[in-house]
Picture 1 (cartoon, rainbow, N blue to C red):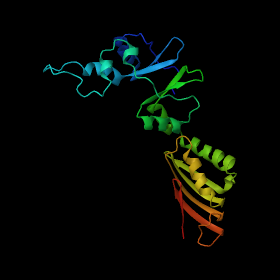
Picture 2 (spheres, rainbow, N blue to C red):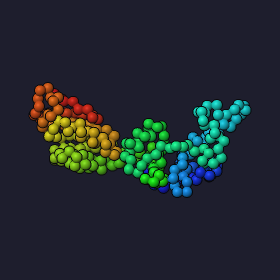
Picture 3 (cartoon, one colour):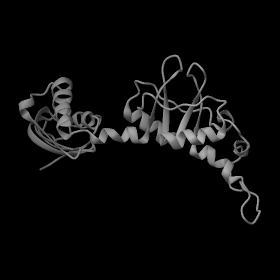
Picture 4 (cartoon, helix red, strand yellow):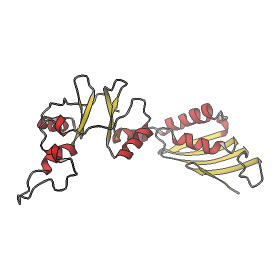
Length: 232
């Protein structure tokens, strides 16, 4: 997240809000009170309502395509008068996938981040969430080997091969139990920066009951995402 977001007070004039967006190269700005408690957020879309209400060259009335309840923003003169409120927010400890789901579910481009007292401590945008995919392949591979296979699954690292190229993870080697394969894939998918996971793993014991009557013995699986199928 951006830890020191640009903000405006509720009584800041309309034109000053426009100037703040232009000066800092942002598309929205949180509106906060004197104690940095979030009141709302003003985006370019909020500001454009005023422009859309202006009559056209043919003197036709503006704002014909505005949604119900938006016309009042066109008469606003301050940040408080044109801001959107209430606002969907995030907590500092919110995981990146969760923040992404909130944005997608509510069709918003950014989430103000509030502390336990409701004060603004940052703002996270779509661009911030996409930065995880700039993570170095070697760092991703190291986290998967240590965090997933050694710490979480207690697997022998000498029996597992992790290859990461452009965020795409390919797993090879051998695990003790077949049921661990799907778990490993899901855990790898949760690692920041992972684009996709392809598993080509063998197992020593089939504990899933899917082996056509064979409960033990070496086997192999090919998995993409969280799906695994036995290869014969």
